[in-house]
Length: 383
Image 1 (tube, one colour):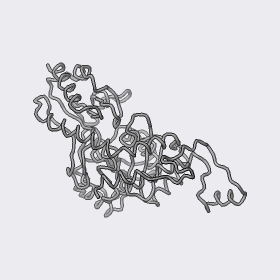
Image 2: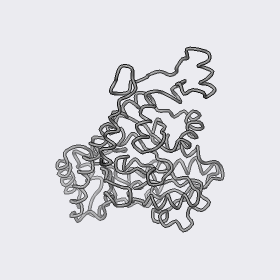
Image 3: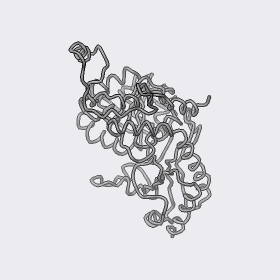
Image 4: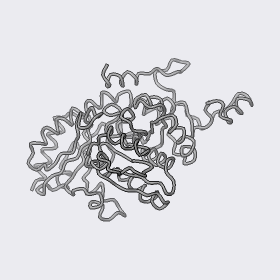
């Protein structure tokens, strides 16, 4: 059985419900009561796992967490209110003043901002390195407490040989943490490649419908227990039951959606290669690195100077201007807008990104319609 079939079958789980529900019931409550004093005492003493308060435990959320653990082949998972909540809650559980983080270059901008605005002022040392530097090691991870990774990384989408990097990290006893939102569990399972902790912005492909903001962390029972004990209850960025219900729905169509995203992306990559105004296509495909088995619908392309980016963007009919990605709809995000956010001057230079770069989220519309739209807009945007 292929990995795709295995994942699709896992998502068909019948939930443990007295009524035989095919979907997890939405347990919309803030707290849970106990039948006896002894039951209450046992729970507070940690002798039972009966739910007590939805900020830390809820049956609907637990059902989603189990599906994500199965999908990533981890031992356990925790759902969060957003992707950045999953990232920050995990980082804060594993670093302290004096800790050292080695982070991949071109990381998700809000992860970068959290490291620079929150962690660094609190005494955490952060350094940024290329994908190639992580793969080659050369002592990069010596003395590092945590390696923060993305494969591929944001904006420029450079894939990383996670087997190599995990081996270097294990030799230096560094914890490895990766954002796997781009590939989803369908096309990449970092835990099986030696990575310690996987995070997702579940708002993206896991949800798949642009109607949910959520995050999730998957790892060993030991690591998840640490997060559940420290930052989940004390920071309070919990996943709500209704969002967990929507995410479970999204997971059940992940296989079909990702295959369509990939088919459209393959079409664009092949045809973009023939367009003279396109300098570079950033879109790693299957087998670009060990463990990567497919191409998602998120890519970026760099135009030459003959293309007027604002005119091109405004001429698109099927691509909407907007942040985020992973839903049904196709989106465009010009780098000069997406990275040049208020309060951060010279951000294009900071992130080392060409002002002629645009990010495309290829949705689930007809691929030929999307391509025709792209070409019409390009003709209007070219000088």
